[in-house]
Length: 94
Image (cartoon, rainbow, N blue to C red; front, side):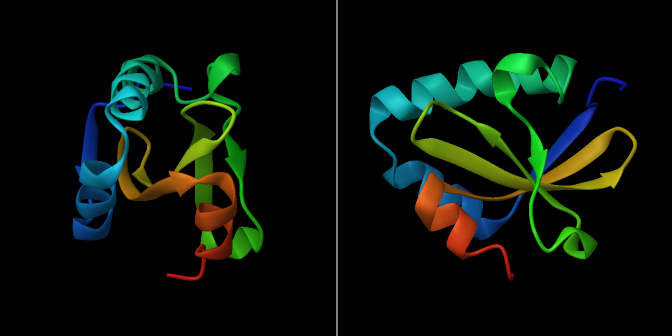
C-alpha cells in the first residue's frame, strides 16, 4: 500500500478529537504519523468494518480507542470519527 498523502477530517472527528484525554491525543498523533507512512502497518490493526459495502475502516490508537475512516482514493482518506472501540463500532452507519 502506498503512503497516504492527504487526510481530511469531518467536523464530527474534530469535535470528538478535542474531547479526548490529552494522553490519547498524543497517542493518536503518533499513530497518525505511522498511518501516513503505511495505513496497514501491523501496530495499527487496520480493519474493514461490517457492513463491508460501506467501505469504512478503523485503526487503533491504543487498546481502547479507534479512528474510523474511509479511503477517498489511493492516497487520500477522510477520518470520520474517533472514540472508544465500542462507541466507534456502534456508529459506523454514518
